[in-house]
Image 1 (cartoon, one colour):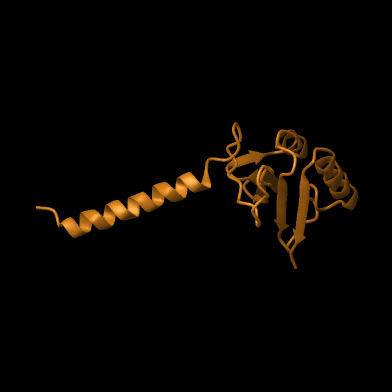
Image 2: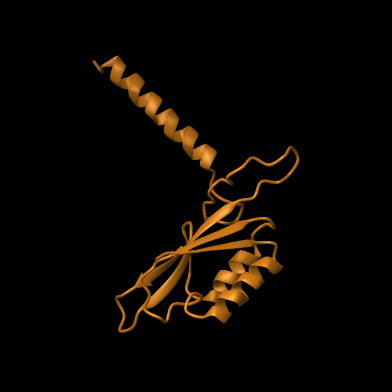
Amino acid sequence: MKNPLKVIRFATLLAGIVMASAAAGAGEAGHPASPAPAASAPAVGEPQAVTYKMQLIYIFEADHTEYIFAIGQSGFRSVAALKKFIASLPEGSVIEFQSTCRRTGDEPLISSDKELADFKDFCASHGIRFEWIPSG
């Protein structure tokens, strides 16, 4: 016979996981990237800003270093592909990008002040706030 106390603990744990998953959601419709909730609650009837965390992934398997931008579970091999995704996000969204302090000098976006400024302007033109948090 199963221990009823263990069954209750397991059911409580499982219910907590299901509730946390439901609260987190699966991202915007059509977007597999899972957004983090906004810091403050919006006023009644006002849409809530959604924050997407962006990373730059370094791939060291090739003869040269390759890079992939990642937002949630979505990856982008080029700035053009990243821009296409960002253009599909709802206005008011936030892209938060915390880069590493170690750089090779050929990373997309962060190695060129002009390219970074152009990217910020692109985001702003689509109603997206880009927050770059340089480390180091």
